[in-house]
Amino acid sequence: MANISLGAEVVMPVEQRRGYWSSVVRRFLRNPVAVGCAVVLLALILAAIFAPYLDLADPYKGSMIKRLRPLGTDGFPLGTDEQGRDMLARLIYGGRLTLYIGLVPVVLAFFIGTALGVTAGYAGGFVNTLIMRVVDIFFAFPSVLLAIAISGALGAGIINSLVSLTIVFIPPITRVAESVTSSVRALDYVDAARASGAGAFTIVRVHVLGNVLGPVFVYATSLTSVCMILAAGLSFLGIGVKPPEPEWGLMLNTLRTAIYINPMIAALPGIMIFITSLCLNLLSDGLRSAMNVKD
Amino acid sequence: MLVYFLRRLLYVCPVALGVSIICFMLVHIAPGDPLTSVMAVDATAQEQAAMRAAYGLDKPLPTQYAIWLGKAVQGDLGKSIASGRPVADEVGRAVKNSLMLAFAASLLAFPIGTSLGFLAGYFRDSWVDRLVMSIAIAGVSLPNYWLGIVLVIIFSVTLGWLPAMGAGAGDWAWDLTHLSHLVLPAVTLAVVPIGIVARTMRALVGEIYSMDFVQALYAKGLEPLDVLRHVIRNVAPTGLSVMGIQLGYLLGGSILIETVFNWPGTGFLLSSAIFQRDLPLLQGTILVLALFFVVLNLAVDVAQAAIDPRIKRS
Image (cartoon, rainbow over all chains, first blue to last red; front, side, top):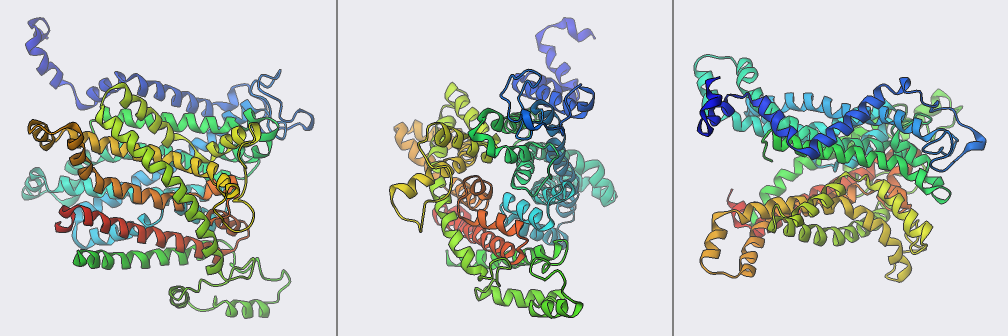
C-alpha cells in the first residue's frame, strides 16, 4: 500500500504483482473494437437463448396473403419471408440454431483435439507418428470439402452437421496443440519435474497444460467464424438443418427465389451471418493480442 | 533437389492411401443401403442379394476396398448410380469447369491480396495498414455464398449487366458470352483468399522489414526499391505456399459458389450426387478433388524448395 504514494519508479513492481488473467482482462478492455464485438455477440446469444420470452411472432406461422412484405411493414418490422412468416422472429430464432451448430463443434474439437495433440506432443515417438500421420490425412481435404463430404454421406440433420463439423476441426486443433506441447516439453523445468519423479500425468496436468491451453484456445476462437459460415453453408446446401426450422443458412437458401421480388429480405439472413462472423473474428484477434499469443 | 523431391513423394504416398480409405468409407458411413435408390421397391430378398453381388457389396470390407482401389488407380471409379455413366467421365468434365473457375478466381485474388498485404506490411500501423486489414477481415468474415447472391441482385437483377446462372451454352470457348458468365462467380470466390493472402503477406512483410539484414541493406546505402527486391525474395517461399493451398481451397471449396451460380463444375456434381444419394459419384468426385489437393501441396513444397535453399537442407 505504501507504494502508491512513492512516485513513478515503483509503479512497475505493482504492475507485475497483478495476476496474468487480470492483466489480460485489462488489455482486452482497452481494445474498444474487441469489447464492442463481445457486446454484440453477447446480445445475439442472449436474444437467441431468451427468444421465447421476447414477445415475438410465431416463427413457424405463415400466411398466404402476407408473403414477402417489405421492411417496415406494420406489424412486421423486418418484413415477411416467402411463406409470410415474420422475418424478425425467424432471424432471432434462427440465431439459436446457427450459433449452436456454429460454436458447439469448435468446443468439442477443442477438447478432443487438445487431448490428442497433448498426448502426441508429450508421448512423442510412435504415438506421435500415429496420431500426426492420421491428422495429415485429414489435412489433405480442404475443410469445406470434408464437411460437405461427411454431411453429404450422413444426410441432413442437426446431429449430423455437428458430427461432420467436429471432425473437420479436430485435425487443425490437434496440430497446434501438438506443436505447442512439443516445444513446452523440451523446456528445462519439464525435465526438472521428471527428474524429481513426477509422473507423466502430473507433469501434463501441472506443467504442460497451463502453457498449452492459452494458445490453443486462441486458435480455436479463430476457427469459430469459419465454423459458423460452414454450418450455415451446409444448411444453405440443404445438408444441414431441415425446413421449416429457422436457420440463417437455410433461410438464405429458401429466400433465393425472392431476390427478384424483394432483394432486401433475401439478403437479411446473410447480413446476420456476416455480422456474427465479423464479430467472432475481431473478438478472436482481440483475445490473441490481449493474451499475447503469437502465431 | 531430386532427393528432396523423392523424399516428399515417399511421404505423400501414405497420405494418398489414407485419403482413398476415407473416400471409400464415405459410402459405408452413409445410413441405409447404398443400393436403395436403384433397387426396385418390391425386390425380393433373392433379387437384393443378386444386386448386391453384382455391385460387389457382399464381400468383406477390406476386400471391397482392395477391389475399389485396384480399379481406381486404373482410372475406373465405377458407374454413377443415377445416370449409369462412368464416374471418371463425369468428374473429368466437371473438374475442367471447376479448374477454370478456380484459376480465374486466383488470378484476381493473388495479385490483389499480395499487393494489399505488401502495402499494409510496409506502412505498418498507418491508416493504409488499418484500411487493408479492415478489408481483409471483412473478406474472411463474408459468407461468400451470400456475397454471390448479393452480386446477382446488384449486377444481374438490378443492373442487368452480367448473367446470373450457368457457364454459357455448349462447351467452354474464349468468347464474350462465356467470359461474362465467369465474372460473378470468380469475383465471389476471390474474396476470401484476398483476405487470407493479404493478412499473411502483411505479417510476413512486416516481420522481414523488422529484421537486421534489412537495416544493414539500408545502412549500406541501397535504394528502397533494391531493398524491396531482397524482401520479396524472402517473402516468396511462404507466400507461394499460402497461395498454393488457397488454390486448392478454391477448387475444393467452390461447391457453395457453384451452387449459387449453377456453375457446371465439381461442386454442382457433388450436390447432385448428394441429393440423388449417388454414392459412387460422391466418392469419386471427392477422391479426385482430395488427390488434386495432395498433388498441389507436393508441387508447392517442391517449388518452395527450389526457390529457397534453406528448406532443402532441413
